[in-house]
Length: 323
Length: 251
Image 1 (tube, rainbow over the protein chains, first blue to last red):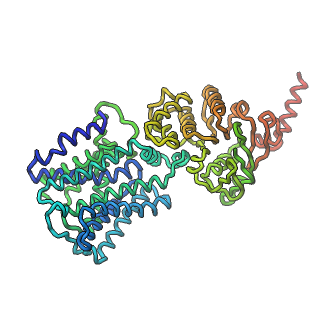
Image 2 (spheres, rainbow over the protein chains, first blue to last red):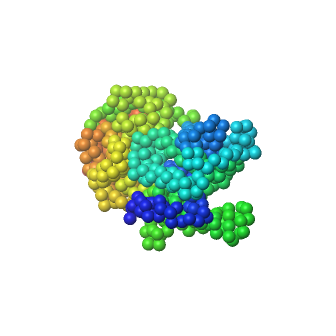
């Protein structure tokens, strides 16, 4: 069956009615965090999967969106729902900044990864030293649980929001696979010179990809801020967000529509299991993430979504990046 | 269609192209030949906007195009292929060609449909859903051509499309290139395979050490002493004519 069909059925049968079926806060939290990981992963996937520009610093976009949403609503009294949109714009703008600078100078591969990492670190240090982020003390969004305030008494409210955002991101990935822009983006990933010779504006294509990717990460940042109501520079701009963003699609399947969703489920499940095994010892879940990643790269370099094809003995064509 | 005037390109102390001039006339096949290292590929790179020139002028349909980015030239209808094939390795033949189609078609499905048509035109219909990695050299060369053709060019620059092909594959390629010209596309090609140059080109330019040393119809070119010397070394033309003369005496 075609991907949109699978997704539409999953959406209608399982995902939309989920809060009616599941009343446990534990499982709703699990679903929310899985979708949130899916959003982050899909954001990375647009740029790294389809565009082949593998970022190690998606926190730069995530954190910028998160702080924009938090600071604007608390200090300037902007409506938090408007802040969600503005956070997307701020994430996209951060993407445009990083992209314009690094693509302009032709940075590719590990150089691009390093520069994005550097940007995230610079943003973290800046957030640590300017007053309006609350610096090292952190930034708290006051608790006012009304829907108009983008805070919900029930988890179902957050679930609905993240479901919409992740569905949007997934629709974007599907659009990329079926549009001229996507064809151009994949061509750029595969061979920049050949793309150029066929009339593709390589830098512009990459720039749009990082803008879209940054925008989605900005949404993720804003959602995080509303859900946890607390930010500090290490949460917003730390390595953990960047690693999550790339780990999710790498495990699920880079450059595929479903990969980030599958990867998000796998990672969140592993996270819960590791909590049980290690007794919530901090950091040990990361060890398990690492082990899973090594296993995937060694035995399933095209990610979990390629498992079915692998078992049937066929190899899916195209769409796949080179690990 | 294309007018190259006194183009010069230096890489450090090496002059790769020295005041080279040539013309490609509308509807014709023009060949650029010369020994290895003569500067053919560099000159191609300059014309297609991939390499900046130090001096000179390149006019395409009357407009100066030196300094115009390659993707802008492709949009205007000047498209090149690469001597070392540059496929989109992770994609199928159809997807590769569709990237070219996409230049003139906004819709993805229209591009994929058109790709099938182009594949048929270059004789790749049976390979259309293969991954590029499964193609032979001849297949990849053909794909390179198909992709460029898919952009709907006015002027096609073919950089050694015959290199690495066996005689049977060359024989298959010749009518394909002729049919491209018949469809109204002007061609400028670099080529080592003289059989191809002789049977295809209306006009030939010979490049040696970055300079155009001869130009003319194919038959004139092969009789030109300077050309023979460029390929076979100093004095070769004289030795050859003496040798031929000797044989004539025996007969």
